[in-house]
Length: 258
Image (tube, rainbow, N blue to C red):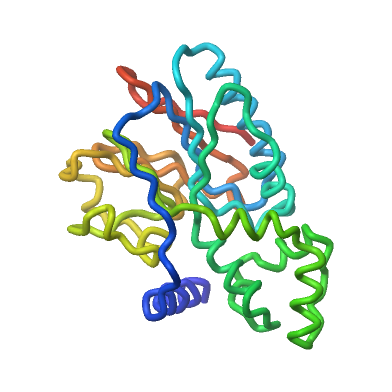
């Protein structure tokens, strides 16, 4: 059933695309990039992972970035706390850049068009609403919108709205779900960047000249291949949140927390 919901939402986004999100294209890379997979409301685990990343970064010279790959909300118990962390708690010595995932897009769709039968509620949205103190939606749409505006900080909504969909530096492209083959980065659509699933052939040599770093598709362990790196280890199933460190002149390093 969940797969059918995802297919419906992706086709809906493709049929009526909103204004496309920003894409961040850089001609230079920092010395070290840490990329973090899908968080899904597990704020305590994210906090522990950030501590490990800060400690790792303290042992390394140079400029450091932390790239969050989206899906901060839904399924886990503390989505509100995750968004508060990402909007109010910068990391000392590390620049944090957050990208959008498909769950952020669907949450925004719900906030703009709330309904008791909205698909978001079956994708973990009810857990997100509970993290804001809302256990039951009223039936009237006007009452729903008023209650949501009262409980969910405007800063959280602005954050979700402002998230870019792609970040590229020489050698790597960071995105929530993946890239559509044969399409230039500047022409990639959010419907693909936030929803696409990688195929078996996508482990082949990186013909584009860069490695795609993504989440979205849960795997038992971090996958590191010549063309892509998948760091979504399905925290809501496994209890493990994963990150990969990409440093000049070194193989990728994996950092994980529970």
